[in-house]
Image 1 (cartoon, helix red, strand yellow):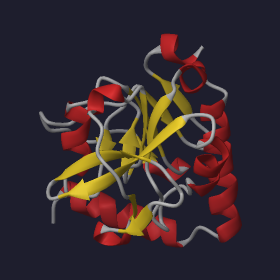
Image 2 (image 1 turned 180 degrees about the horizontal axis):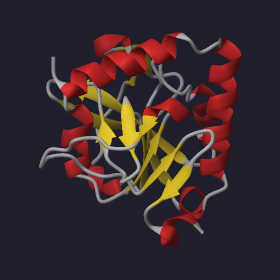
Image 3 (image 1 turned 120 degrees about the vertical axis):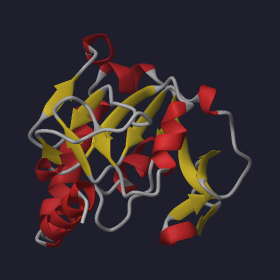
Length: 186
């Protein structure tokens, strides 16, 4: 079994131990930190994920900001992710039981900020995904600010990276804010 597969299993096991209130509190802490940042306030076109049950819940931040910011969600398209404007009346259950938007994709170049889920992040800004490579392919096409988010136990010391991996500009967990580019955060 590979190191990444073992890490994915260990993180998945830790997630099963979270209570509903812990999940809610942790999501509120992480997104409150992001909402106070310069980059969030300065950016208008924001790509955010619609959370799966084991991820930091994005429902509240999406509901709170979709009227005043241009929020976009990813949609699986074969091996890639399309970027679609969020409209609460135009969503469906898509690939992998993820809530996805219905609509016409926009070019990745229009996104200013992306809030990125992950299985794990390291203290150098590296990200470990679920293993399908959707975000890896998308991030290669984005010049947007990339903020990785997760629970405290998802921040580890080191992830072995591969040439296609793209580092985050910031990693935010409930107890840690690691900013790699201070200009975006002040």
